[in-house]
Length: 179
Image (cartoon, rainbow, N blue to C red; front, side):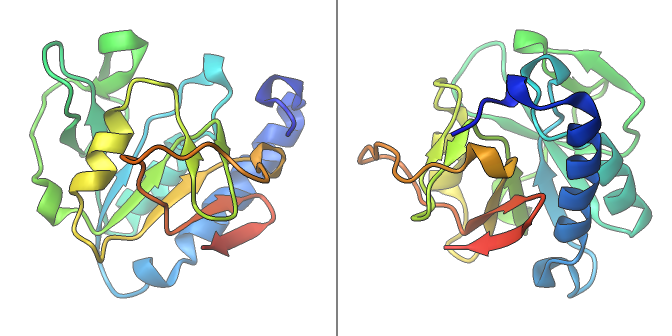
């Protein structure tokens, strides 16, 4: 498994664009406007960049919600994002909308998550806070969940805990992999 830090910036830009293209061609987005939960990337973590993807989703008429890490509590807030330029720095330095308008978890039609690694069974290695684990466990059963990763972040097998929820799949610069 390659580390994200070893990826050349010019490769990351091209791969981010390829990943965005794969996301926009998902069948789940072709059924009309959807509510899409997508993270706002943290450049210092070298996550798959989502800012351009978010702008494109909004232009296509989808409703975008982003995670907000609460000051108190352990459950993510899902905040409506209407203007991707009107952000403030939130907890852990994660960008969030300046005005928080919460969206119910039952309204979310598609989830795009960050990950450190993903395995072929849909196992996801996150950052250790458990926020996404708790969120994914509460979703409707029919809500597709995909991690956005670079192909080098694929792992043969990740440790699975009883509380872990398998993803529907993951999306890399090479394409969509459904579990």
